[in-house]
Length: 404
Image 1 (cartoon, helix red, strand yellow):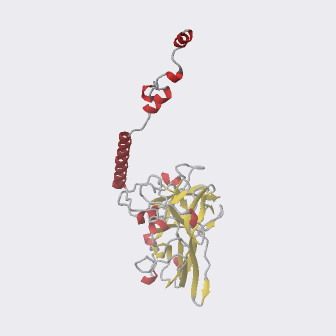
Image 2 (tube, rainbow, N blue to C red):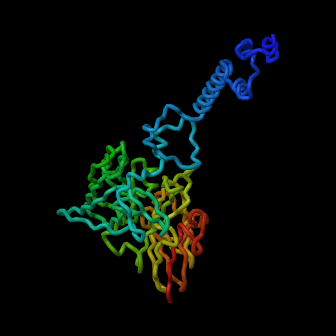
Image 3 (tube, helix red, strand yellow):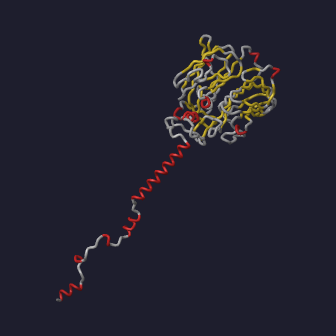
């Protein structure tokens, strides 16, 4: 009896306690969090539907603004300029035309101090003067600290100066080392139509790695130039041009002068390490400007003496902009335009002359007083370097240093 009472007072043993189900147990704190964050099937379906709608909306918006049918291969991996406005119907060909120069295409890096417009000497083949031009992609300094990726003839900007005499027979072999087809046009010259140069009009473009011979008789005298005529808004804007000076058979037809100065103008668009062809459109507006391949203060300083007469040949090798060129120190006399000499009674005086793309002017300027006289464009932005003046100017500026 005593033992029975003692067992009752101890209560039921664990073995004798009734079993309880999981549902009857109070949930722990951890179990409560698992339930709260458990993803349900309706939630998954909702998120999926929202994602599909957002993706479809994004694709529709993109398709309304750009042409999704154009792939990277269609534009050859083109790098487009910052700020370039491209509509949905902008074709791949236009993108390639406006794209940055491909750094992988560069074959030569010119020395910082290198100068363009170097006289190209011919090889004489019987009665024919033979010249060699090669078009290639190079790196070129327009300032000591500013390099551009450019298209160039014979590794210089501008291309080499070709000097001829009226009546010459010439053959100019053009070799294309560019990554794209090209041709050359002899601006202002009377030549056979097959030698004129417009790609796909008078000749097939010269493919990369190939050459073409231009041969003709020189009938005129005066200031001319040569430039690319295939994708010309790209290739000429990137540096494919050069001076072509033709002396008259009778030297007395040229006005007397003490020194000759050739001025070739160009605009550049360089942004974030890439060089683009400068054009008058959004994203491609130029921020550097050069005379004979250099921006002031890297432009040439011309040395003269009081009384010297300078024959200055302005060449509109620029591709898309007009430059009103002005000389300090007194007016100059216009004696020829576009390779045509004016009769002396038709000479006229100016101190500023608009040089449009393709135009040429020959002017005589006399050094009247000693000092440092500026020759510059009178669009003030064009006398800056990336909107900054250096040593008092920039861009399309050079100094004529006149001593007494």
